[in-house]
Image 1 (cartoon, rainbow, N blue to C red):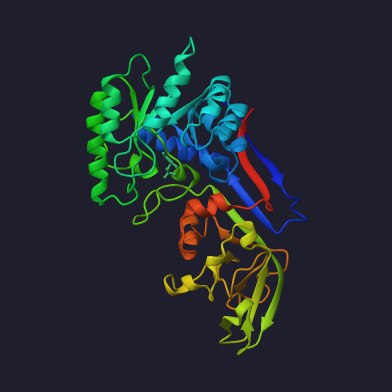
Image 2 (cartoon, rainbow, N blue to C red):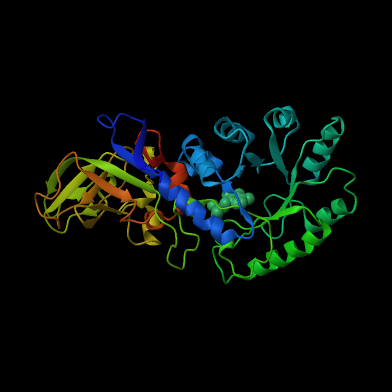
Length: 388
Ligand SMILES: *Cc1c(COP(=O)(O)O)cnc(C)c1O
C-alpha cells in the first residue's frame, strides 16, 4: 500500500495580494481522463492539451496525464508541442494547426508530428521529407463535413492510391456536431470516415472528440481525442454532465454595501434597485476572463439570455447585479443572513456549485471559452495526491 499525501502546488499571484483564486484538482482531471480512456476502449485515449491545456497549464496537466497512462497528446501549435515535450519527453505529440515549411527543422529536432490538412501542406512536407534519409512521420487530416482543416475525401483518395513510401502514421477527421447526438451530420461524417479507412488500411485512425467518445454509432477507430470533458466540461449540452468538475474559480469580496431602493448600480445605470439591496463587490472582471457578457443587465445579449451569471457563497446562489466591469463584479447578497458574508470571503464563480457550462451559458458562450479566457491575475492552486 502506498500512502497518498495531498499536495498543493501554488503559482500565479500571491493569494494575499490577488483578487481571485483558481483551484485545479489534478486528481479529478486524472480520474476524468481514466473514465474517458475506459469509454474509448478498445481505442487508445489521447489528450488534447491545446491552448495551454484549455487554460489550465500544460506544465501542470501533462505530467499528471502521463502518470495516469496517457502517451499521446494533441496541441494546436508546434510551440505548444515543445512545451509538452519539455515535461513529457517521450510523449507522442501531434500538432493540429497546419504546417509551414520554415517549421520543418523544428519538427525533426523536437520529434513533433504535424497533422497535414491540405494538399498544399502535404506536397510541401513530401518535398522536404524526400531530402531526408530517415523520413519524419506525419498525420493526415481529412475533412468529412466540418469544412475547416483537412483534405477533401476525393483528395485523400487520390493520395491513398499513390503514397509511395510516405505513408501517414495517423488518419484523422473531426466531428462538427458530436455534442448534438441527434444531428444528421454525425452519421454522415462517421460513414465517410469508415469508407476512407478502407483506403488507408493498416494506418491508425482517430475520429472521436469528447462527445464523440460517447456516440453509440461511432464505429471503429484506434485513437480518441478528448479535450473539454477531461477538464470537467460537458460533452453534451442537452443531457446531464457525466464528468466531475476540475476547476473552481472564486473571487474575493472587497466590500459589502447597501444600495437604496430606486437607486441604480454600475456603469450605464442599467439596474434599478427594486428594494434596499446588499451588494457584494468582488475583485474579478472581464480583464480576468470573467466575461462582460455575463452582466446582470445592460449588455445586448441580455435579450437572448435573460439572466446573467451567478455566484455561490454561504450555501446560496446569488445573482450578478449590473454590469461586469474590468476588475470588479457585484452580486446581490440581500437574501443571505447579514453576517453570512464579509469582506475577504470568496464567492464561487464556477466549480462544484455552479457548473462551468452554466456559468458559460449565462455569458452566451461555452465552457471552452471560459476556461481558455482565464486570466493571469489569479492565485492558482493545483491539488494532487502523490504516492510516496
Ligand atoms: C479541440 C479538438 C479536439 C478536442 O475537442 P473537445 O470537444 O474539447 O473534446 C479534438 N480534435 C480536434 C481536431 C480538435 O481541434
